[in-house]
Image (cartoon, rainbow, N blue to C red; front, side):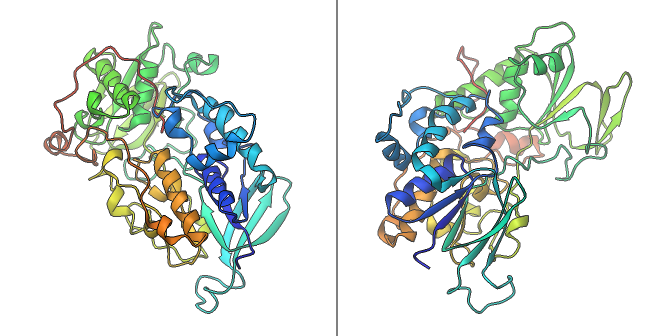
Length: 441
């Protein structure tokens, strides 16, 4: 099987980094991207500015691939938007990798050749069978020695409903959106200016939406922030103690908005239903009976989850809580860890019972929200080294993650006392005049 290619699913940052690592080691690789271009998912949040610098967003192997082209490296200290990340890095990288990247091709299934998941015989000797479907409907089966799934979680946002399932009335509701608004676009400005918007979620995307929407000054603009946990304090991060300054500044700006009374904060609110209200508005109903009325828009930013359906015929060992690889799950549990308290990991933590199958990048984190691009780059470096037979390099850690300034994870706290005890190592951040950016990697 050594002559067969390694198939990478997804031409996003981590997928292309995997391709660069494999090519550098002389391993044949094919990348399948269901979108029409590299970074197709990134392009869907093109207005959002990342809180990692360019220096942390360019994979080392990818940089080495690009050095031999006419690519102009962005300044290390800059913070790109999604659009800039895709245009100034992912597109040139995909072009440099050449014909190994195939667009408009979706991977719809994965199996061991000639076997379903029940059959034991041949799982170590038969290649993997990658089932693809092109945009024109053409289907194909491609044998592969290994598959690196870097397809991410962008296409599967978590619902607004507090039970992990859509709230009653959520499906098909025109009031609900699952993306950070772009207030510089005429369409979004018309939608949110002068309207009552509810922001749901306690992560960086929700903080980014708060920072963006509090800039709207049109009369009638009203914002409500709902949190499932019992307190908002643990959501703001480490402030000045965060070694990613833009990430810390984002939390500080959101805290400034809350302290200034620019939005109403409702804690312990688990949405059970969305009901029709007056004048085309909706009413949010919590499972404890509380109601938020006269709502024009709901921005549900409650995280993402992995799409596992097309992997049903291979043997994965996933944590029952996070849906992440079982060896990785304890290291990234958001009840315990923040981005900076997750130590770098690689092939050892990402190996499954199915030989040659790896979930990487955001998808490897399952439902945990603490992923950084740098983590994904280290993952695929280790996996590529293992596939090339360099097991010493595969086992070596070559990354130090920036500290968040938070002792542990925010957790999914319902109890305000637990929330306050699990927050930042340093005192609560004070309001500072810093330029914050919407959430990113």
